[in-house]
Amino acid sequence: MKRGHWADNPELVENRSMMGVIKVSALIAIGMHSKTIYRRCLPGERWQRILPGVVLLRNAPPTTVQRTAAALLYAGPSAQLTGIEACLRHGLRSPSLPRLNYVHVLVPHERNVKSSEFVVVERTNRLPAPVIRGNFALAPIARATVDAARRIKNPDAVGKLLSEAVQQRRCAPEELFRELDEGSQRGTALPRRLLAGWTSLRSVAEARAKAIADTLPSPPSHWNVPVYDAKGEYVGCPDAWWDDVGLAWEIDSANFHFSLSGYSRTVERNTRYAAAGICCVQTLPSQITKEPDEVRASLIAAYETAAGRARPQVRLAAGS
Figure 1 (cartoon, rainbow, N blue to C red):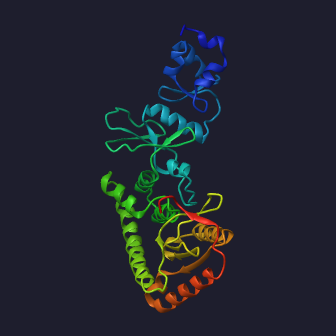
Figure 2: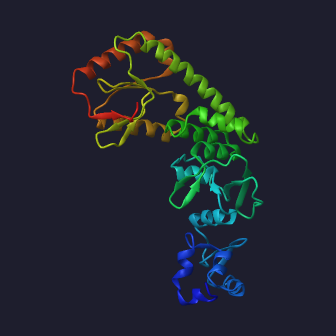
Figure 3: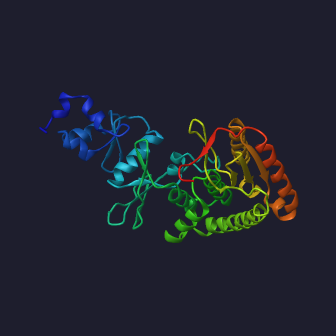
């Protein structure tokens, strides 16, 4: 492309940018002279340097999205967001998540890119396949959650982040443990301790629940299977499911309800069950341990009630 071509097409620079952020090398590639770029980034001029080799095509403070775009452009090809920013873009919304003044990115280990200003660059031999959300490449949610938990010092905030990821069934505790075991060990003591306690409680409750279920006249047909309504919309993923009558059993541990947001998610889930016409039995782990006969009786009664009416128009995931 001939030098100066950008001047004949004023929209070319903006179109080549990412959220109004562009690399200096990209500007030079469309024919802009380095002196022109330098002048436009002087104090009071129309642009500004936001990171080494990266320009913001505005003279106003960058938005969160622009900072994120700048971080990825600075880190280069194959870079992906991780940590808190990636968790937020995956849809986790724990109110206790700290709002940090840096953007955490992963790059292949062979890339010689250093942290700079508001970008924390982590080189890794375990670069995962990214998840694309909008225009951004994100680390998978288990990796992003663990990377965030490693850097958060507040135990309550770490607990709420981990519990939200598990409660929303975005990833299983086993996936988080695998990331803790295979990745950097720095900062893993707290999330490891929290997950170990929850997994132990959960596994004991599920084992006892299955023991009760085995004694029922009609045991569950499925365990931990996603359920969808007639339109294909996600309804829930009950701990146990009777597909012949559309009955769900949820073992709701208070250990995962750290806040009003956790309670709110349970209410929303139950509302989805009701809207889909699904009968749902809710049981606490303590009831399974202390009142197994009562739990068994409530499941039998719920099954009889569900069987006495038309099965709701819901379905399981393909292959379930």
